[in-house]
Image (tube, rainbow, N blue to C red; front, side):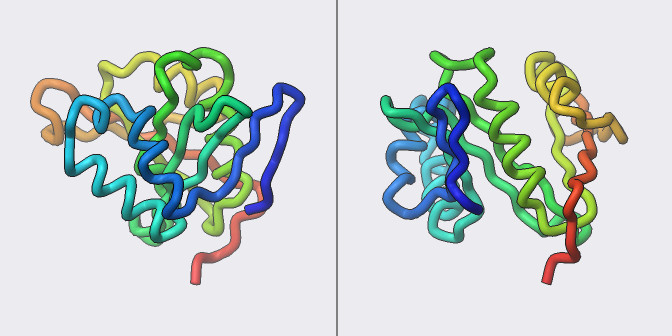
Length: 155
């Protein structure tokens, strides 16, 4: 993924090992002390699965894509710093991972209760494709699909 800058000065680039602590610092779950989330962030960065959106002030958000969901891309995590939510950072990250997706389909999911994420996905051109009950008791998981323009089969 090439570094991509937009007029607002936001750069989206592949995260690396050195980014893990800064990304944990903007992740609301990690900030609350979730050691498993911190370990996941470190591993995503180590494996090159995360992309980060940043400006001169530092990281604004990050996104993780894995290719283990029926051999298709899956956005495992999208996190935007609370202080910049609603300013286009999430859409920018989603657009970036969709453009670099190496499979014909890119999926993600969110809880039915997560209305802001659903609005973001719809605004970014994703379509609802299914509902799964039983993952989080009383809060079904809603699945979304985006068909990247340049998807190639994943090796």
